[in-house]
Structures are given as structure tokens and as C-alpha cells.
Image (cartoon, rainbow, N blue to C red; front, side, top):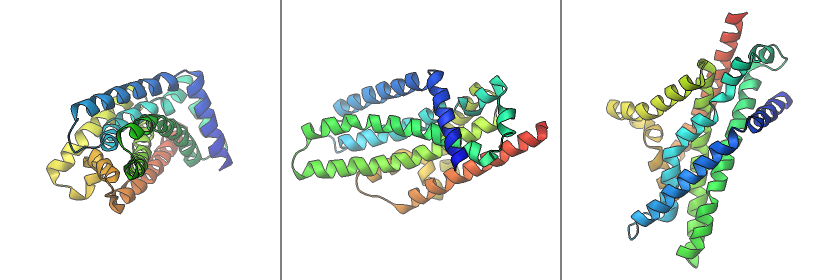
Length: 242
């Protein structure tokens, strides 16, 4: 666990030195904030609450943000020629993958936490009394579901970063999968994959109080599976290159 923590700190500091994290997070916050305010104006008088609109918006954009947050995870190591020395260290592949994953996930969850300040500032002005308590609870429930989705999308980004050598290829492959997979599963009638096909509906349900255990189990099981496959793929490429 100590090696994992050290790798996570090293990865986070690397992002900060490269001035990669700040522009990415700022762009995401500005984009989501602008779209959320626009959604509030466009949905004025409709049933969808401000919290539900917030959860729906982030569920749609989080896959893209998480992919871009993990683009440089292993690609930079390959470009700088430091991946082999990292793999030759006492840290096993699982610790390397987990450490880099935790650093990227901290970036995504930290940005999501900052994005939640908007609804927290707006809610007191649009609700009062007991409604405020219900809305804050809805924001918390929607945030928990979005955090679980973030864990899955970040693990997916790390998996592609291990498999592909170029950051551009990682972005194209992950975004293509995020865009095409839901339609493919819907076409095949994969009802059990509903949390992957319509993550925004899952987030909306959570914000409305319909908190189901199946999406939680789906996200919580797929993320570790992707990390396990990433570690095995990293081991495979390491042994093949020796």
C-alpha cells in the first residue's frame, strides 16, 4: 500500500508540474457550469429539478472528462522512456496501475466536488424549509452515483492508456467506445447493461430518490475488473519487451 501511495503522489505531482490538470479542470467547470445555467433557463417551469439537471449533465460529460484526465497516465512514461525503469522497480504492476488510477480519480472527484458548489449556492434561493433538506439530500445521492460512475470511467481510461501508446489513440478509442457502446448494447437488447447504456438516467433516478443497488454493483465491480486487466496487460507488455 505504501508503494501505491507513493506512485499516486508522484503521478499527481507530475500532472501539476506539467500544468495539465488545472486547464482541464477549469475547462470542465466552465463548460458544465455554463450548460447547467442554460438548462435551468431552458427547463423553467418543467418538472426536472435543478439538482436533477445537474446530475444529468455531469453523467453525460463525465466519461469524456475522465478519459482526458487519464490520457497521459502511461503515454508520458513511454514518451519519456521511464516506463521500463518504473516496471523494473520493486513495485508490482498492480500497485503501479492502482497508484496512477487513484491520482487520476482524485483529479476527477475533486473537480466534481468543486462543481457541486454551484447547486449548493443556488438551492437556498430556489427552495426553502423542508424542501432545502430534500434537495441537498438529492444532491448528495446524485453525487454518490456520479462518483461511482467516475470510478468506472477513470478505470476505463487507465485501461486504454495501458493498451495504446499514443495519447491521441487513447482519446479516440475511449471516446468511440463511450459513444458507440451504449447504442450497440441498446441495439442488442442488453437490458442488464442499463447502467452503461444510460448513465444519465441512473444519475437522474438517484437525484430523485430512486437509488437502486444494481447500478452500484455494476460500477463497483467493473472498475476493479478493468484495473485488474490493466495490470495484467502491463505485465504482458513488460515481459514481451524484455
